[in-house]
Image 1: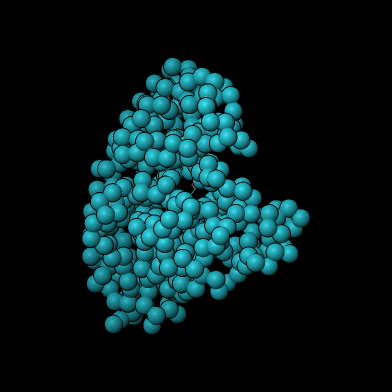
Image 2: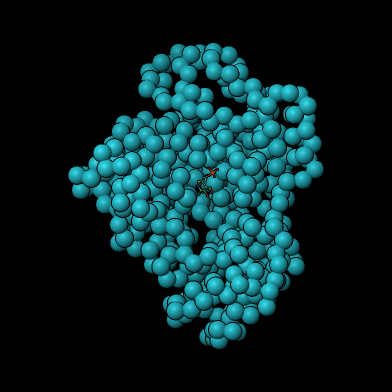
Length: 409
Ligand SMILES: Cc1ncc(COP(=O)(O)O)c(C=O)c1O
């Protein structure tokens, strides 16, 4: 059996025309460092940010040239010192944790919840120390993390909550959009996301101080900007994280389509889930009431009695043409850069080999490890053009594999 799935592409004529308009204007970027309004970007950047702030219902939407840049700017916007701890989920992309290293702070991994694959607030509670300055939770695969539970864990402590909603530009938690419920959060606009600008990111926050610092970091940390409160601006290492005018113009068009895109794609994935549920021995996501999932990835957990078949299932699905099927996900705490301390070299590693307090090895996030090693399959539905035909093809492939491997109740 062989099937061919059409690649998903959210870019169309509207984006082409928007890009053409910018090119014709000759102004591909208008950012200038220094004490003027140009410090905050060109006309398309400002227009896009205004639209985004309204879309997400936040005071500030700050565009950046990638969400990795966004995460670095966010960590830098906090009230942190080298050696401070930031609790982070191991099930995310590596940039979520390396953003912490960029400021010489220490990533402390907390385990994930086995049903949502998001950071487990109970394990976060256990990992909090007097040095904890923030928690970075991800809305992984497009499903919201339990922000209320995290807020409860933090209580009155001076710990900021950051949400990495790279994969969840339009998911709802208790009726409110993910990314907007933490102190500061944001989204990725890289090419394989639900909507994209090629490369790009968006920071969202209602916090004046965090927003100002993030905007400074975005544009070289130039302290020449007009500010009355110099104390919050000291020691800012800035970068060039500025978004170009073409990306901003395309981004605006992409956001105008986002609701419709997610609505259609969710409809299709829900059809797929209903059908997949007819196959035995796999667990599919349960969406809580008043929550939504924008399905960047479809997470599948196999029952324990067919564990020995996981590799063959994925191999067969790939052979058939489902190239988005993968075994396991990531466990950042086991990456060589943490376990072998090669990120900076021994001498420069921020918390040094002699500091035995921080341990990165298998065994510290058992739920994540068990899922990764044994039961989890990710289906990267972000790769496919989702329509009824795709759903039927995917279903056929799964049925074929289940029959071939004689997977029964
Ligand atoms: C959860 C998560 N965090 C961070 C990133 C980094 O985003 P970007 O590629 O825009 O830098 C990604 C990108 O795939 C991601 O999925």
